[in-house]
Image 1: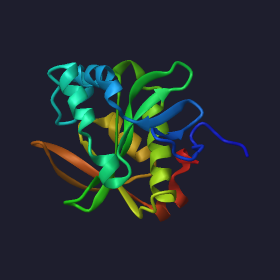
Image 2: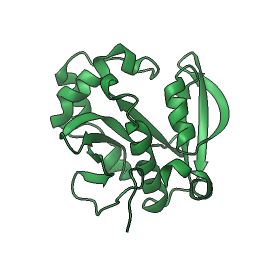
Image 3: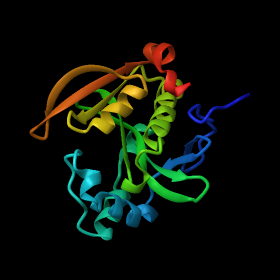
Image 4: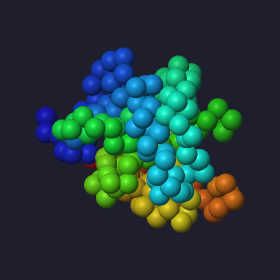
Length: 191
């Protein structure tokens, strides 16, 4: 089988390892990621469009990770993205279920020095494919502040279709959606 950079090699899930591409490994976040997680969210450029605040300390980031409920509640969540050639934590990407809205969204966040390397698109593709093929999701949405053109471009590259605007923490946000059928037919960058 020939595998391109963006086609995932979906392997059996181990305790923490979830997915991989030719360049990236996605695994569950653990408390051992606290320092990297803290540093990632400590960069104002990284969290500018997220509505999140920086952690006050590495201990606060560790506490967040120790109490992160998504894996136990839903069987999936946001995953650490590790560069395979260096073993370095470069950000996170993954799916998040919102029980109130009864929907799953794709999200991603990377260290600023890792931007413009295609990691967001590559990891989002493998996560979306996993959501449709392994989790049997029928739809995945993406949200971003409209002003965050780079994240909007990633949502479009993975085949998401603009749906509507919404209030995103007092800013204009956009919602994109992707059905399993549309993903199979139109997501050229994820094939």
